[in-house]
Length: 188
Ligand SMILES: [Zn+2]
Image 1 (tube, protein in one colour):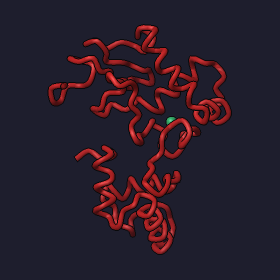
Image 2 (cartoon, rainbow, N blue to C red):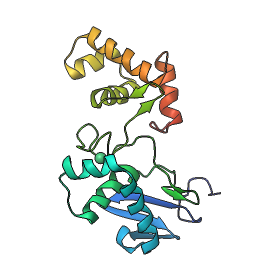
Image 3 (cartoon, rainbow, N blue to C red):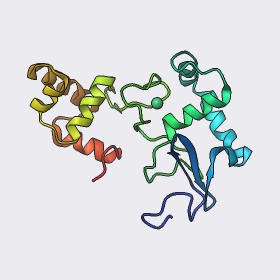
Image 4 (cartoon, rainbow, N blue to C red):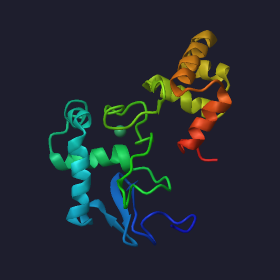
């Protein structure tokens, strides 16, 4: 077990990946190194993971226009593991994908829902617009403010909020907050 507040990879066998000025960095074996300097067998685990994900592979090619295998791998990792969230990206059980995180292009990443994971509840996956609304909601914005943000009417937003709650299996705002907290989509 890692002492509280220490990132994964510093004093354990886990690993934490993050993005520093657009480049992938890794905390592994008590060092901070670039992804290229990870042992081949570790980089291979990520490659296998990507290759097994056919939807992501297709999206990397068609939506993101990548053809070079290394560039595809870098983007795949940024979209799925680039968040410095206190959760190891790899531990003894293998790679761990967080439920949803902002690859830095939330709402505009061409691979969203295919390369990037999207917020998914028991009854469905949020659309891009619903994801944006979800984050405004958990920031504490009122329905009126969210409607103004998107320049739509209040009933329109209320309908969309209802749809979000249904997908996430939540009955009200508090349950949506709980959903966000449990998935570490919000830091409190
Ligand atoms: Zn992405």
